[in-house]
Amino acid sequence: MRAMVMEKVVDLKDCDTPLTAADLPVPVPAGSEILIEVAACGVCHTELDEIEGRIPPVSLPMVLGHQVVGTVVELGPEATGLEKGQTVGVAWIYSACGRCDFCRSGLENLCPQFKATGCHAHGGYAQYMKVGAAFAHPIPEGLTPVRAAPLLCAGAIGYRSLSLCGFENGKRLGLTGFGASAHLVLKLARHLYPDSPVYVFARNPAEQDFARHLGAVWAGHTTDRAPELLDGIIDTTPAWLPVVKALANLKPGGRLVINAVRKEAGDKACLQDLDWTDHLWMEKEIKSVANVTCADVRRFLELAAAIPILPEVRTYELQEANRALLELKRRQIKGAKVLVMNP
Image 1 (cartoon, rainbow, N blue to C red):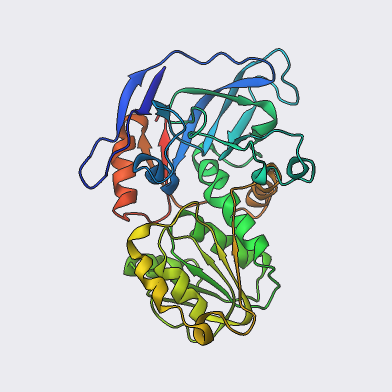
Image 2 (tube, one colour):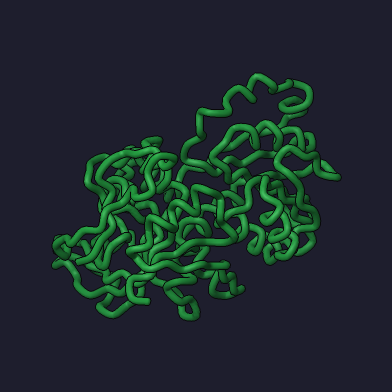
């Protein structure tokens, strides 16, 4: 099968081809696993973190990709709940133990044995991949593979982030960073909380214009002060500066939800500017997001199909994965980037 493979950690400032085209054997599903013929796979900032070594894969070479949509073509002897020909998706959560207190309470994202797609096991930058049947999510009717792929990470983790905000209709929501996840959160928030104005902070004027186009009542630079203090803010950036600036935009008792697997070390100096009175006092809260649960993925897919929420998408052929990653690195974003296997 054709695949784009990460063979080593590189600095994308010095390397235009972090992934290598390869011909790999088609995986064979065992036990409760299924084999998926991949139709589309979203491109995520987390893959940049893997390539540049902030979240290195557990072994190399590795097939990246954790926003995977395709067709079930083979079932392991113990696989249940799915059928051949069914369209399914695979998210960042590749597996969990199923036995610990976290798993039994529906918080398998906190399982000590959590494994990630495209990091602990081969992902969707390939024509085929295998995964446990319990971690493959049926794609509702009305969602094409290309439109569904970004929903599996950017959308699902955005849904979890919004849930962790403790939000209510009529409150004011802020989004700092406006890439694949934030633009889906804005669409979701406008549906779930129609009386809640959304404010967007983004470095790029094009992203600010995009946010206004999607319904933000205000959009400014990451370092700006919003015209009003906000009840909740979701940070989707890889940097520390937006965290500091977001805290200054929270009202008393407000909550900042940080949706990031890692923060880059380069701008840590801004943390020295944290001021107790301006940033943290008056019972402001900070909460992190740790991956997603299977329930998050399935609930969001159902919501996305029903509303509907259709992400803005730019497609690339599988062999163009390097170009898509470099454009993401250079913040040429506007919506989500998706690899397609058979354009």
